[in-house]
Amino acid sequence: MSPTPRVYARRKLSLLAALTGLISLAALFNGPSAQAALPEPIAASTARTYLSQLTVETEDRTGYDRDLFPHWSNQGDNCNTREVILQRDGENVETDNSCAAVSGSWYSPYDGATWSAASDVDIDHLVPLAEAWDSGAGDWTTSEREAFANDLTRPQLLAVTDNVNQSKGDKDPAEWLPPSSSYHCVYARAWVQVKNHYDLSVDSAEKSALSGILNGC
Image (cartoon, rainbow, N blue to C red; front, side, top):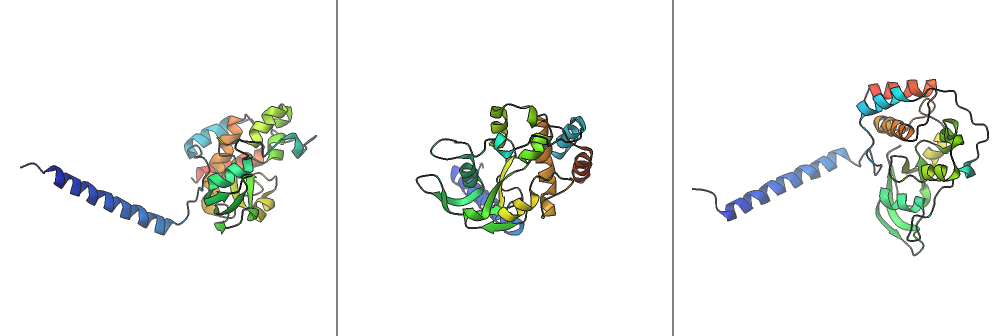
């Protein structure tokens, strides 16, 4: 005799409960996501291919000025880019009428810290603005630099602990990596994706550091 619709329903509920339990256990043991809300970077294999295709050149910072990259541009609804990322990357974020985050929590995958005040969080340009300038953005138009500095589509902007971001400064992966080693693979994949998309070059030390990380992913 075939199972009745009611039996099928009970089986579906039992399966759903089991799956929910497994998901809850995974969350309990894994803790906060190591990737936070960063848009999913390309796979390590793709990143290795892209890295092999990037132009290797000596960097030149002549003429750089941060103001040449208009950033935290208006994104609509009274929100600028920083405020959009704070809402994207945070949990239970509440904003006031000017779109400023007044409460919430933010997990920083760079160091594993969680913050309850937006003032403790910076929005990192994963590929720093000065690094982009060194790698080819000096030849861009202002509107192209603005698009780079406010890119919400690629894994280029991320809410992180402010003093960790400040310790990074304008350094590339040969000079600085997130304190949390578990994030290095995601970081390298994202870095290469951004550089590939914007046709930016790498220097030899930077390429070597990225290769080492990606080969271990």
